[in-house]
Image (cartoon, rainbow, N blue to C red; front, side, top):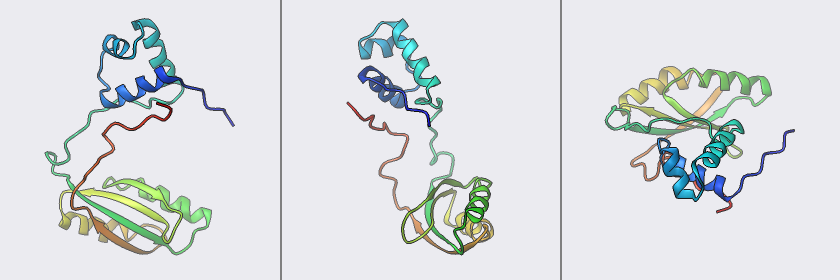
Length: 160
């Protein structure tokens, strides 16, 4: 087991600032954290290599793209042996409308975040794809009325 590389307050500030604006120029980033360009650039590269920074992406408007209907689905499986979990996990990855899938410790087995264009489209995805996933015994749907906070917002970086 690899021990996670330690990060300091400069690294935490870099992570926080890049999470808010991944296109920030290295000179601005360096000025905002109080380092010169070269050591700041080296820290960013080290954070990338160590896996703290997984990549950079554009935050898209799901509303403008017509994909602003969100439903959360609780899924209970008929069996939870490892082979069943692997089959379910693999099949979930092939449904693009499932934006997130979390295995849950609780009264059900999985929580899915499903994004579609409308309740009608969701109903089709649910009926034709989600309910036919391997070993699904039951499901319950919860429709989101409003996204109050999305993951594209800045995440806290512990130790600050």
